[in-house]
Image 1 (spheres, rainbow, N blue to C red):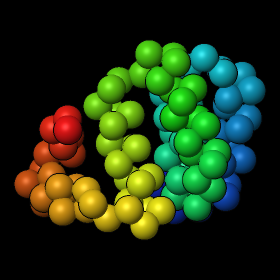
Image 2: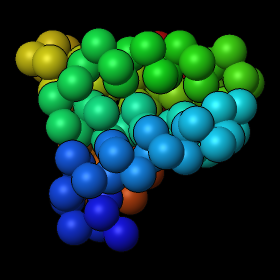
Image 3: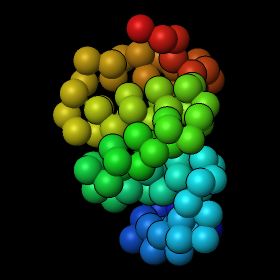
Amino acid sequence: MALARRDFRQANQHLKECLALWPDDPAVVLLAAEASRRQGDFDEATRLLAVYQELGGSWRSLELEQRLLRAQQGDLAEANGLLTAATDGHWWPSRR
C-alpha cells in the first residue's frame, strides 16, 4: 500500500522487514529494488537487482527495472523506447 501511495520511505522500511523474513523470494527482492530506485537509492537498487538476478528472477522484469534505473540516473538513451512501450501498453521492451 505504501508503494501505491508513493511513500517510498515507508515502503522501503516494510520491504526491509520482508527481506529479513524472505531473503530468497525474488518477488520481494524486486519490489525492494523498485522502491529503492523510486526513492533515489540507486546503489541499493543495483545491489538488489543483482540479488534478483542471482535468484533467477524474470529476465523481463530485470531488464525493465535496469532500464528504468538507468533512465532515472540520467541515461536517456533508452527513454524513447521506454515511453513507446508504455504508451503502446507493452511494458516489456525488446532485448537489445
